[in-house]
Image (cartoon, rainbow, N blue to C red; front, side):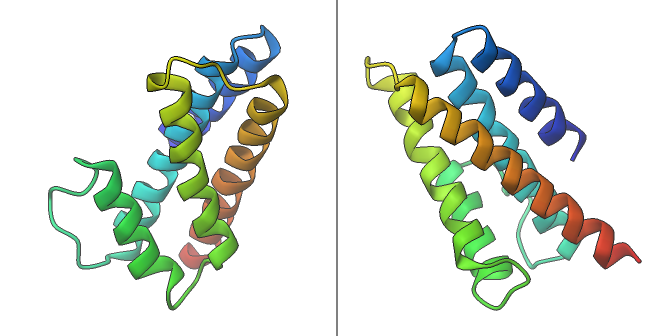
Length: 124
């Protein structure tokens, strides 16, 4: 979760300096790292290849942590949307808008905070 929190902070800094593409990249990786931490903490039956592909991690998160909880479908959708926006920011050749980047960073913060809260709750 440390990497997720750091990426969230970096996303906010990049957004505040006008680097919308960089902010979206860091926001998505904050979500990716939080989802990976949640899967590892849940002891879901995932192999060592977890995190080697984005689609594999997203599918595992959905299957093991959204389908039957503890996370809602809305939280799962944030991860999917985060990847879509990152692909535009990183590969499409177009920049995302300021408004889209602001939304992406806010959604990443919500996602990371939700995962973090659940992990803390589960540990107690």
